[in-house]
Length: 101
Image (cartoon, rainbow, N blue to C red):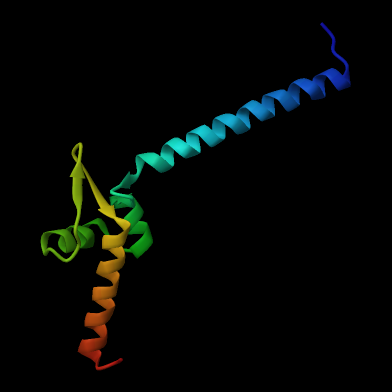
């Protein structure tokens, strides 16, 4: 079986269009899966990378009540707004302890 260049390019364009559609669908699904009450959810790995901390530090923040978390199907998640609040509180406490404003 032999096809010419024009026909080959036509098929490749169709394949690429379908791959783009699938990519959009996957992207939309993954965005919707990590949202709770209109807020983005982060898991432990996301948060450790974002804050550049260890899993032990993250556990310490949870158990001390400094960082709110949610357990969904046995997995721990954090709302992005809660993480922002945690960071603000940490910065505020640091400024108070150092005397900075």
